Length: 174
Image (cartoon, rainbow, N blue to C red; front, side, top):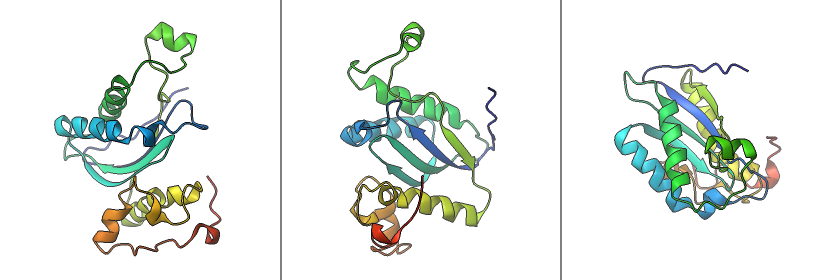
């Protein structure tokens, strides 16, 4: 299968990045400090602007913007995944293929990427990022999830603390 990516210098993108073993895995939240450190290390050498980010136990969503003239999000994701993986002990289950390739068994190889087209598209994806913990039933209120840029948006007055209401009012599907 051929994957088609949209490469836009200075583009703003939405991403979904998953752990290989998703169900019952809480590695990302359990090791949140190592993940944050990996992201910051990559950001220092390959800058990007974070518009929205949420880390869930087994996957994460974000909206980032690349610098003008730069379209290389693939290197950033490769390095974030690699830096995070290298900071963990080698005790995960690996397939014969991954062992033969010398790969870790932490991340799915691929990720979902979407080029943000306009302001409306940006708002929709930022909202999606922030509502995700509620959508997955991890909290009863978006403000209760600590691993999210939602709190920055509240501080800036963009969202109210009770944005999206309690989970009983939502009927979103994944």
